[in-house]
Image (tube, rainbow, N blue to C red; front, side, top):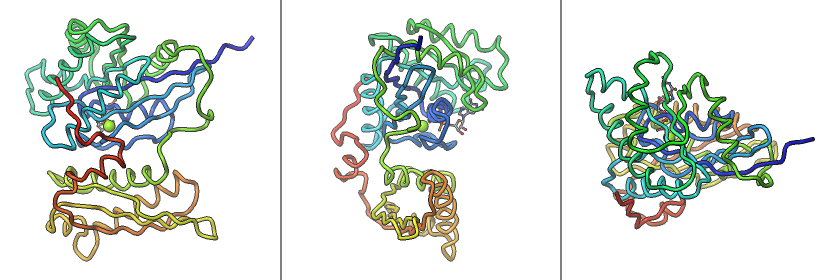
Length: 317
Ligand SMILES: Nc1nc2c(ncn2[C@@H]2O[C@H](COP(=O)(O)OP(=O)(O)O)[C@@H](O)[C@H]2O)c(=O)[nH]1
Ligand SMILES: [Mg+2]
């Protein structure tokens, strides 16, 4: 007898940099969501699709939750909480390494933010209905005894249904978590083909790949001051695609940094992005990148619509 099919949504929430996107890619078994060492890489909910036994699970990867200031940040955080509402279950991903570092007195700025953001998420989740899971991530290289107080603290703030110790990077502990997510899904038919990894349109996925290469290559405030859009996609007779993308920055000095001396930076970003796109789409890609300056691009309504974000969002407390 075959097991009845299940289908459900799991919202992945957490502080910036907790490893949410890495975990979604790990569970889906392919690259769905871009990952960089920088905070706030994910700007809008990205839906990854995973087959776990007889269950098809849609994992909603969300932007990190923090105290937002700019319009784009507010829209990102609001979208993350909306993502939580979409789920049949919620998974709170915590950077356990940051918590352990704080507990042992290494109070670095990033770890402190991560810990206070996680506590705020636990507190708000305490009031939410439905199954809630906690994943202590980045346990690779952390001694187990150090993790127990972290788990104890977070479960005091919110009654999680289960706690998992995982490494999204190595995959350790992820199988147990996957089984729990599959069990939380309601019975029902699958909504996507079993080999589909994401519901993201190709033009947007291509823009995300280029944005990832930019995040990896440029630093300080600049990653947060730029956006990428695919403006043209033509399939050529030989099966290759010709893509044009515009990288929009807010200032001419930023444009110069993105282009680099003699175009060197833009060239290497384009090369890395083109190769990854060819791999993802399964055909050669000719990529043409343009850099434009638009001072207040992050105040333009159309951009928010394109990313599925709410221009007037107020994420609340
Ligand atoms: N050591 C370690 N690093 C991880 C793990 N998961 C994610 N990372 C790293 O943490 C950073 C942020 O990951 P990302 O998935 O973008 O986090 P997000 O902001 O929560 O989506 C990246 O540099 C990842 O490589 C893990 O399990 N172990
Ligand atoms: Mg992310």
